[in-house]
Image 1 (tube, chains in turn yellow, red):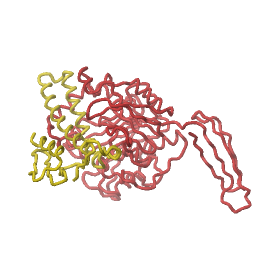
Image 2 (spheres, helix red, strand yellow):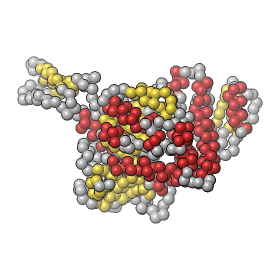
Image 3 (cartoon, rainbow over the protein chains, first blue to last red):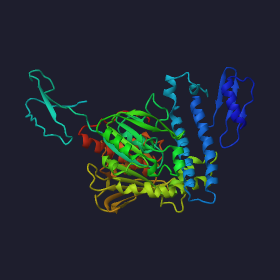
Image 4 (cartoon, each protein chain N blue to C red):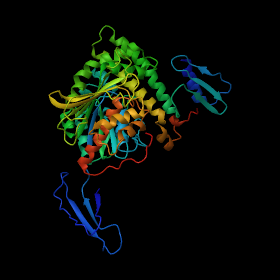
Length: 129
Length: 405
């Protein structure tokens, strides 16, 4: 949660001088480092360049977590119900989408062409490695 | 758009015959124009015959049934690479498009024909595997149109948002690949396919692969991955699995038999099941077509490391069809193993010795590059090129440079 708000703050405010790096514990470690006139982000894996892609990754990650929990709840008691299989199907769809995005990122940011044409949009703001 | 083929005769002294073509099997007439040089100059060229076809070349349609998402699958990348070039998402369109385009091929993801988006499916209580979530009428209409050379506005299903995005324009390519869960489900669509492939992953291997895919994700655990596969299994068995009886080729991926109790899914046993009597498709064979062969290439001429390589070839029946089965169990460890194996396979439709090896090396970073999945996917790619050439009677230029995909 704290990292989420820091992320938002990092994006909206732009430069935050003297802010301490924040490491989020968990499977992937990320560090936010803000220096004057730059937003810098160090990621454990992936090479997302544009804000839109970074947000998409996060969105997928959060949805997967959420949907797995939902599926467990829905399936409790009745594992063969329609609701149960739909819930796990959603998890599968999102997991595959996340994996596909990871694969794409190994080559280049999927927003590359879009952002060359539309550099002014919010989602095309650049994160530097 | 007209295609012109130019033939050159060696010298005027040779007897040239110009045959009057009958109406070609493609259904359009060809006009021929003949030019002669005087022959007094020492020119290499004698007479040239230019024949021009005044109709649109047909689009070859390939269907691929797979449960592993769309378009980015390794199989697609290998296939498009056989034709040269890498398949890229359409530039300048929706960045979440599932479509891939290269010079010769366009790969369409059949999820784009979902009639129900994620919310819709939730309301109706159907998974994406259920035919009720898919618009087969539209799928048929558009694949038919593309096959006939007409561009279509195809919907886009956004896998991130789960919504149907505005359509994108798809122009008819030389080779159209439709990939997804239901390429062979609807009979009308099935009849449009020039060749179809079903990728049949066994449960144990599916589990191992999904673990590799998902374990790094927060929110996932072994238990959730297992539960997801189990919950989808009834729909998968009811709607997706039966398609394999219609496929011209089935690639079956099983756990290895070379390592007792192996459950890592790293060493694989892969079966290539090829239907007999398929037009323009001659099955791969080992040594003696139609016989039964068991072959371990490792021995005096070739040293392999553990667990080695084992091949099997033989005739069989599959859902009441006559088939030929080529099977590889184990892993390639070194380049010379690969080329050794290639040199003993027959009917692999290569244009030069070592082409399979070259293709495998080109994509050594792809999953399956050291086992039967990569080998058979590459071979099927070459077979599809062969089929394409037979269907349109032109030559595909062998890609000269090894571009990294």
